[in-house]
Length: 436
Image 1 (cartoon, rainbow, N blue to C red):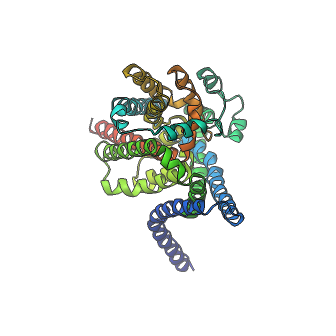
Image 2 (image 1 turned 90 degrees about the vertical axis):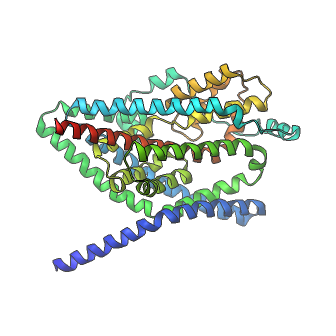
Image 3 (image 1 turned 30 degrees about the vertical axis):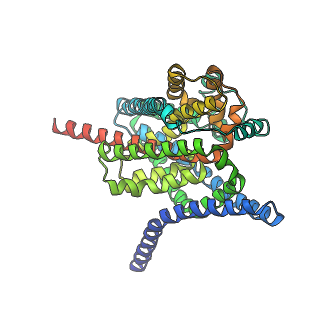
């Protein structure tokens, strides 16, 4: 009986391993196929049967996103608490927090600085036909632009959750993370028995949730295909012909940044290049398919834990904290976007304006609201300060379904790179401490 059960479990593990090997290829194929089929349907027109197909896949894609979001809060809150409460001391947990903050500030400054220095060269080949410019300006009033209060004062006022349960229900992740971090540090001061029970309970919940997450990720190819098909039908070919240059700059910048992040993971993260490529496929596929770093968090955790074997105390803190706080890709995206709008509207944009845009983007990317089009809200004060018309938001929002996907992939890779680097730092510190 026991041997039969063991044999059955081994078969299940082998099957799961084979599925995991095929899953990355299936995700990438689904991404390409979804965009291609969506563009094909868009070219056919607006027949009722096409609307029915798009509506069906919209439901499928939304259901898959909801299934991922269902697991996020019960996964990351216990994981973050366990990572802090399970640390050797509050000093150890605080060190990881400071290192994470410094790492992301440096990344953002680097992204924004390079974008400011290269913007003029990147857009040197841009020539706008007058008719195209007129069409883009005419479309400003037709496009739907997100609205909301993105002021820094409002952001700080909402930082501390009045009711953590309500924050969880509303999905205000940063406020919830602050509560989880505070709870974790408070647990360090609790009696040893109580602290042990908290850590054990949180790790148990996280382990069970990871099993559920694996089940959701098994149907990722279907979810990604559905989402990209819907986006493809909405964009068609018009957006590419009018805004192709800006799209190519943003996508090209994301590709270059991704190469740099891969090099960081190999050199400073002490990871084999093969492991880096294998580990990044699932998280980036989810990011490209969903435009949501939050949705890619379970895949990031799975990569850090199972593929790269990073310490839980590192990835358990860095990844949830980073996903809910930092959007480093906006550091270069905002610089390129504002420079493009200055060309489009014929507004002078010299070194001082570029430097201001880079500083704003580097320091305030953490204020991006965690809602669709949130980056469009947060960049509004920058446009006003630079004398650019707010109507330009509509143009940025029109290409957001494409550029936001590559930007999200960069956010995901940035999170993984910081986790890998800090894990290497922790291992080195532990080795030096043991030698002493």
